Length: 223
Ligand code: GDP
Image 1: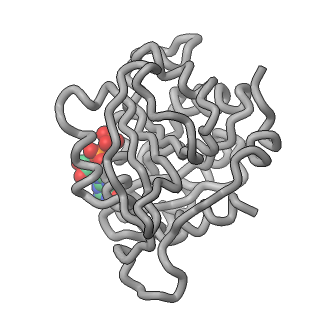
Image 2: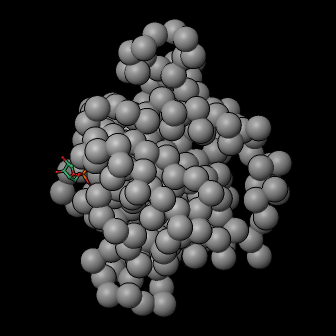
């Protein structure tokens, strides 16, 4: 049985750390530090489930590493791009001022080049689907889609699966800097309509657009 979203929220209160409001326009000034923890290729190696966790998912090439760079800093994110780690779940800890982990980020392998199949994890390592179904501390999934390409069936499959599993997710549209204002509006609407979403958060790792709004959106999840 899956715990309902409400159950999960009750059990795992938010301890979200986000860029200091009004502190500076410089988005690199955060109140936390990030630390690469480990790469896991099976469930036995996941970090112990203690603090709330946020998973990042998306098709290969969607811009996930670039977005994570923008969130956790290039040095931390780079580790997960080293050979052998792109098929693993890479865990990062967000540390508070006392160097205690307050939140974990889980960077999942890219998907999307496998043929459509019943399993969302076709072409994914076998432990990914159980991770999404069973990880107790998983609080929220961040699903990245490319704002420059039409809605993809593999993304729709993932969203259907997450809904079915009772997992909360937020959809982030990447590479928004490549689009003009009109294209942006049109493409974001197409994504919302195709996947029946209430909201899509536009971001650009290149310009930093939407990064602060992304943190604010996570903060809003708390309430
Ligand atoms: P991943 O496979 O999902 O980790 O994708 P990457 O982060 O490696 O990005 C894939 C490609 O998209 C690379 O060529 C990036 O330079 C490019 N890219 C990623 N994010 C952005 C963005 O915000 N704007 C633009 N213009 N290109 C981006």
